[in-house]
Length: 147
Image (cartoon, rainbow, N blue to C red; front, side):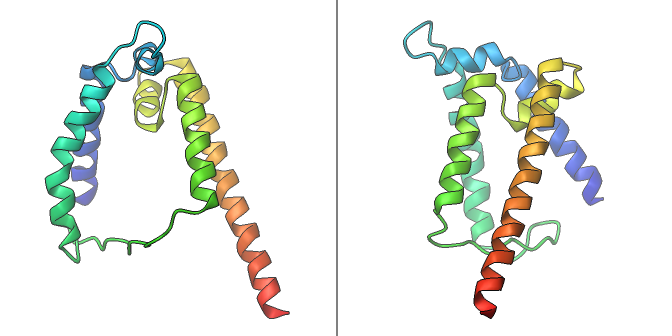
């Protein structure tokens, strides 16, 4: 049942991206082009998404488990560190250069859009590189703690 609900919600999210035009990199890049022909529609989509998500996120913060029984990961207070900042900067650069972020890229991949395939491959490579670097960092910390 969980997989079916996840599939339906993913399809709904993808449909929303298609209807709003957010899988078109040109639309996203036009939003980032403040000096040219700026298109504010992405900002309106973001504001609408935030408006829809505020209530469920507030309710979720008061619950120990999700409606489907999943356990929420613990929140890390003060977790703004160098890896988060570097990752955010890299994400922003990639978004600005390609006009794609993970959600629209996966929808574009499903639609057969070749630049989305290149983006998804790069995204997977980046996730694997992160895991490798995180593992190397943990091994270094463990080695220095045992000395």
